[in-house]
Length: 465
Image: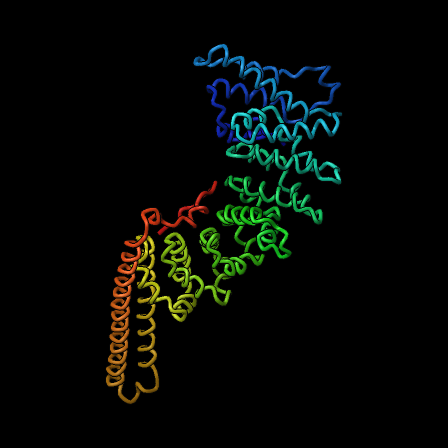
């Protein structure tokens, strides 16, 4: 299926999502003339000679029409550009053309669409996506045809949601997965990973890509068991998995792999930690994901350790969100967090963390305090209903309340001591920083940005407080 399958030819609703930078009248006529008439299927030459399609001619005339702000020179330049793009499209669309000509057309599409948003839109309207997707099935032992098609499709999808949707609708995802079954072809695998990253940025594509079998392939690429994957491909895999994790329907597929344990083993990698925590923040929103995280032996100690990364507030915020959700949903997880020593880390976070981290830490402390209160009440009730109550219920009750009260006072005293110690430690650390900075040159005051490289993404998800 081609770009036009999203239009009113089949009742689509996304026709207005592509920006042609032309008036609405042009957009409406293009939908009628091109999507329903041209570019969907390549006619054979005999039919083309017997019956000339009016759609392409009408598209050419409309694209040549000058805007009110364009002078004759600009109009002429636009006509030349359009004619060049039409020639490129014809190279891909010829029924009996040589493979050399088709590969030349694919290479030109890749070059023209690398930095030109208008070329991406126009070439898609001229119908280059279906032949490029079909080229993925070419019988080529050298794989030059497939690589040329993969990178042409990759550039067509850059910042163009309509093209992303059209590529997926044309069946490219399953063809790409079929390609990676070829052994010992790392160039194909890395090109497919890059395409999955771009295609998964569109929300409507996330369930399709996630259910296609792409997730196990991305996980294996990220793990890189044999050490043959480039650093760029592993980074692209991690970003693609983040995009897919935004859709809850994909979390179950991720749980079925060993992605989550692998992410915890790599959480100490400072270059990828924020992206990893972002994935876990999406996974924790699904019950199966929380259950899988709880099953990992060192999950809570690792996440609690992240709370102490004072030089990375973003990681602290995401780790506190994961812990907060799990503490809210499961009594067993709350007990495991307490045993792992989360209270002292939360107290420190309420003093030294970012505003969002402080709020989340406060909510968790309140949740844990309520849990301790419930536990004390449960102990008191069980004592009253036990065998000792037959001897002297009031005496037993008084003793139990006194014991519980003394335990609460002891707990509060320990918390106050911990707070005082943290405050003193904070003052000492601040004084050391001030002395250190006083002896540094001016250019060393620039804040660290080692985590900022991972913040840019085609798809983002705000974490609720």
